[in-house]
Image 1 (cartoon, rainbow, N blue to C red):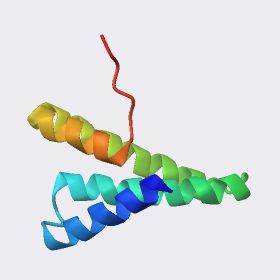
Image 2 (cartoon, one colour; image 1 turned 60 degrees about the vertical axis):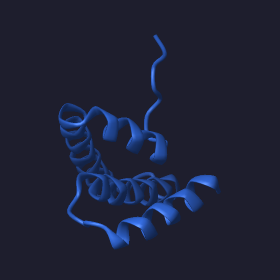
Image 3 (tube, one colour; image 1 turned 135 degrees about the horizontal axis):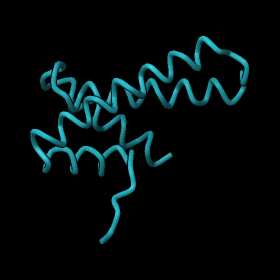
Length: 90
Protein backbone atom coordinates (compact mmCIF):
# COMPACT_ATOMS: atom_id res chain seq x y z
CA UNK A 1 0.00 0.00 0.00
CA UNK A 2 2.85 2.37 0.82
CA UNK A 3 4.55 1.83 -2.56
CA UNK A 4 1.32 2.57 -4.41
CA UNK A 5 0.92 5.92 -2.66
CA UNK A 6 4.58 6.70 -3.30
CA UNK A 7 4.16 5.86 -6.97
CA UNK A 8 1.14 8.14 -7.29
CA UNK A 9 3.08 11.02 -5.69
CA UNK A 10 6.01 10.45 -8.05
CA UNK A 11 3.71 10.23 -11.07
CA UNK A 12 2.01 13.52 -10.22
CA UNK A 13 5.39 15.18 -9.78
CA UNK A 14 6.72 13.74 -13.02
CA UNK A 15 3.65 14.78 -15.03
CA UNK A 16 4.80 18.36 -14.58
CA UNK A 17 8.40 17.57 -15.53
CA UNK A 18 10.15 16.07 -18.54
CA UNK A 19 8.56 12.79 -19.61
CA UNK A 20 11.64 11.81 -21.60
CA UNK A 21 13.93 11.81 -18.60
CA UNK A 22 15.60 8.60 -17.51
CA UNK A 23 13.86 8.75 -14.13
CA UNK A 24 10.42 8.96 -15.70
CA UNK A 25 11.16 6.09 -18.09
CA UNK A 26 12.39 3.90 -15.22
CA UNK A 27 9.27 4.82 -13.27
CA UNK A 28 6.95 3.83 -16.12
CA UNK A 29 8.83 0.57 -16.68
CA UNK A 30 8.56 -0.17 -12.94
CA UNK A 31 4.78 0.30 -12.98
CA UNK A 32 4.51 -1.96 -16.05
CA UNK A 33 6.70 -4.58 -14.36
CA UNK A 34 4.55 -4.57 -11.23
CA UNK A 35 1.37 -4.87 -13.30
CA UNK A 36 2.75 -7.73 -15.38
CA UNK A 37 4.05 -9.52 -12.28
CA UNK A 38 0.62 -9.47 -10.69
CA UNK A 39 -0.88 -10.71 -13.98
CA UNK A 40 1.62 -13.58 -14.16
CA UNK A 41 0.77 -14.67 -10.63
CA UNK A 42 -2.70 -15.53 -11.92
CA UNK A 43 -1.70 -16.72 -15.40
CA UNK A 44 1.50 -18.69 -14.91
CA UNK A 45 1.65 -20.14 -18.43
CA UNK A 46 1.20 -16.88 -20.33
CA UNK A 47 4.47 -16.99 -22.25
CA UNK A 48 3.78 -13.81 -24.22
CA UNK A 49 3.49 -11.80 -21.04
CA UNK A 50 6.61 -13.48 -19.65
CA UNK A 51 8.53 -12.43 -22.74
CA UNK A 52 7.22 -8.88 -22.47
CA UNK A 53 8.22 -8.77 -18.81
CA UNK A 54 11.74 -9.91 -19.64
CA UNK A 55 12.05 -7.26 -22.35
CA UNK A 56 10.88 -4.48 -20.00
CA UNK A 57 13.22 -5.72 -17.26
CA UNK A 58 16.14 -5.53 -19.70
CA UNK A 59 15.22 -2.01 -20.80
CA UNK A 60 14.96 -0.84 -17.20
CA UNK A 61 18.27 -2.52 -16.34
CA UNK A 62 20.03 -0.74 -19.22
CA UNK A 63 18.54 2.62 -18.24
CA UNK A 64 19.59 2.15 -14.62
CA UNK A 65 23.11 1.19 -15.70
CA UNK A 66 23.29 4.33 -17.84
CA UNK A 67 22.04 6.51 -14.98
CA UNK A 68 24.49 4.91 -12.53
CA UNK A 69 27.36 5.65 -14.90
CA UNK A 70 26.34 9.24 -15.64
CA UNK A 71 25.01 10.46 -12.30
CA UNK A 72 25.41 8.24 -9.24
CA UNK A 73 23.45 10.56 -6.91
CA UNK A 74 20.33 10.58 -9.12
CA UNK A 75 20.62 6.79 -9.46
CA UNK A 76 20.68 6.21 -5.70
CA UNK A 77 17.83 8.65 -5.14
CA UNK A 78 15.67 6.94 -7.77
CA UNK A 79 16.32 3.48 -6.34
CA UNK A 80 15.43 4.69 -2.86
CA UNK A 81 12.18 6.29 -4.07
CA UNK A 82 11.03 3.28 -6.07
CA UNK A 83 12.37 0.62 -3.71
CA UNK A 84 13.79 -1.35 -6.62
CA UNK A 85 17.07 -2.74 -5.32
CA UNK A 86 18.66 -3.42 -2.01
CA UNK A 87 21.72 -1.34 -1.32
CA UNK A 88 24.59 -3.43 0.01
CA UNK A 89 26.23 -2.19 3.18
CA UNK A 90 29.97 -2.58 3.16
